[in-house]
Image 1 (cartoon, rainbow, N blue to C red):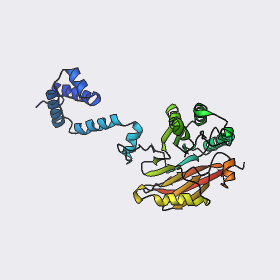
Image 2 (image 1 turned 135 degrees about the horizontal axis):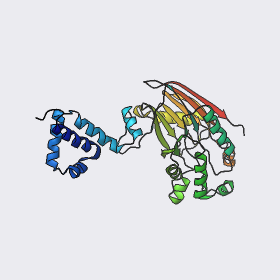
Image 3 (image 1 turned 30 degrees about the horizontal axis):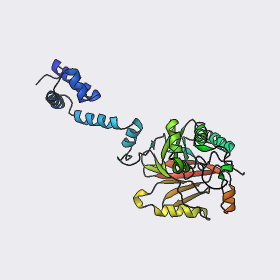
Image 4 (image 1 turned 90 degrees about the vertical axis):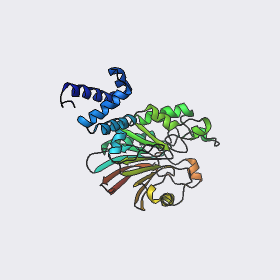
Length: 322
C-alpha cells in the first residue's frame, strides 16, 4: 500500500480528479490507460484516499443532465421526472414574494390597449414584482369568423409574433406564460406555435405549455397557470369552482391562476387560492352581442410562504375603466 501523500497517491489523485471532471474516455486517452487499469485505480482511490469518490462521480453525472436552476430545484425537493414537463423553480429571499399577473392581452386586436399594458408594467416595477405570469391569449390570432379581419391591427403570424415579442421585451424580468385558444389559431391554420416561438427568441420568456403549466416557489409551492377552451359562465366563480372540483387530491396546486373568460375574481376553495385574471383588452363586439362581461385590468399578488404552504395570500386587482 502506498503511503498517503506519496508520489503514487499524487499520481492517483491527479488521474481520478481528471476523470471526475472530464469523463472516463478522455482519461483513458490522456494517460494512456486501459479500462481495466482505470477501474483498478478507481477501487484503490476509493479504498485509500476518498471513500466518497463514487458519490461525487454520480453527482457530476447528474449535473451534466440538468441546468443549474434544475439542480437547485432538485436540492429543494422539486420533482423533475423524465417524460414530464420540467417545472421552473423560483427561489427568493425571506418569506414573501410579489409578482404580476395578467392575461388575455389579445395583442393585434383593436380591443387591445397598449397603454394599459405599459401602465401595468410600471405598476409591477413600482411594487417590486419579481416576475410576471401570463395565462394565455397573448395575441389575437386570426380566425375564419366573418368580419374578424376588420378587428385586427396586426395581420398574420409574423406581424403578431413581432408585436407580441416587442411587448414582452418591454419587461426586464422573467415572464412565465402559457398559450391560449387565440394563440393556437395559428397552429390550427399553419402549424405555428406563436407563443413558444416568441419564447425561443426572448431569453427571459419561459413557455410552460399549451393551456396549462406550472411553476414552483422554492420547490414546494405549486402555482398552476390555466387557460382552457371551455365557454364562459354567467357567474364569475362557477368555472373556477368546477375546475377546482376536477383536481384529484395529489394534483391540487396551492395557487391557481386562470385566463380565457375575461372575468376577474379571487376564490378560496379546497385550500386552493384561485384568481381569475380578467383581461388586458376591452370588451369586443362579439362579447357584448353574447352578453359576456369583460373585466379589464391586471393583478399584483403577494404571497407569504412557510414550510407547509401558503401562509398568507394578498391579491390586488387593478381595474381599468375603459
